[in-house]
Image 1 (cartoon, helix red, strand yellow):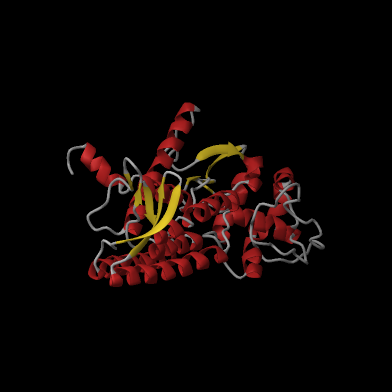
Image 2 (tube, rainbow, N blue to C red):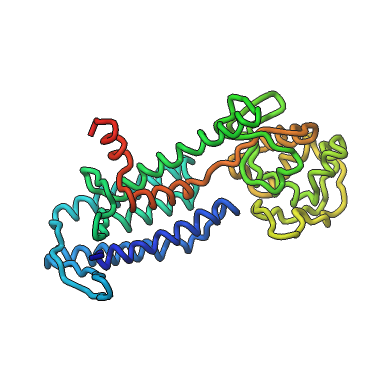
Amino acid sequence: MYAAAITDLLRLIAVPVLGWAAVRDLETRRVPNETWLPLIGLGVALLLWDGLAVWIDTAWMLTIDGLKVGVEAWSAGETARSLALRSAISVGFLVPFAYAFWWFGGFGGADAKALMALAVLFPTYPVFYFPSLTLPRFEATLGVFALTILSNTVLVGAVYPIALAGRNLLQGAVSRMMVVGRPVAVETLPRRYGRLLERPEGFTRRGMDLDVLRMYFSWRGLTLAQLRGDPERYRDPASLPSEPNDPGDGTVPEGDRSLVRTDGGREQDGREDDPWGADAFFEDIGGPIYGTDAEELRAGLTLLATSERVWYSPGLPFIVPMFGGLVASLLAGDVLVWLLLQAGLG
């Protein structure tokens, strides 16, 4: 017989939603805020439902036995104290944790909101009964499922730099940056997401963000090919247009749309010493953005003006390993517990 609590089945809505968000984050580095509010609302409603189920010691289960499908009342199997404790840890710890990481720049906004949504949705372990097994397979002692998702997310994310280093090694691209980035042709950068790992003087972990590069080109009505064709001209701040374009948000345009608009107005004389017009650009948009300031923009433009290949980091949006962590958690449970058991340490 197959069986699962109706509340746990409803929580599975998070799987396709997070999967869609992971794909969108990979493709555009943008996930709408509206993605998370319904999940948080659903999580609150299901938590209240679970609280009622524990209070009356009745969990409504969807059962499938052959061709017979029904809803049965089972014992809730959990005490009010354990539900309250696990919910308090999940929501009371992970929500502030996600916010703090976003505040200090460790997470993007979508990453933090996704983790908050999962903390509300999965305070306790869901249980799915199959004829010969029960999923998830391994439950952590604390029993806070959102913490298991986070733990598995870290493990899934750890695979990425290993795979990236292996790819670089096979291609002969050996560098101390090989676990975080890879070399690419400069002309491909305007249609990539990520950030440079180089400056003219050498490697850096926090180079120019490529979203800022697109914003700058759009603002000036310029292309990378034009800049590389006559770098001395465009380094001169007198070449800045008197009526710059709207820089946009740095998203790669879809289809065949141009990356820039070339109606940037007339060139203007008499600008102060401002190589590449970097100070003017950031003054116009309201200051540094995406971790890139005027100095980093100048360094990036100087590098791209003369280099053929550069090291860049495509990055891995945290939502991507989070999706993998969610799927692994639903199937295997706490993978770290399983690894410890396999090593004879559990």
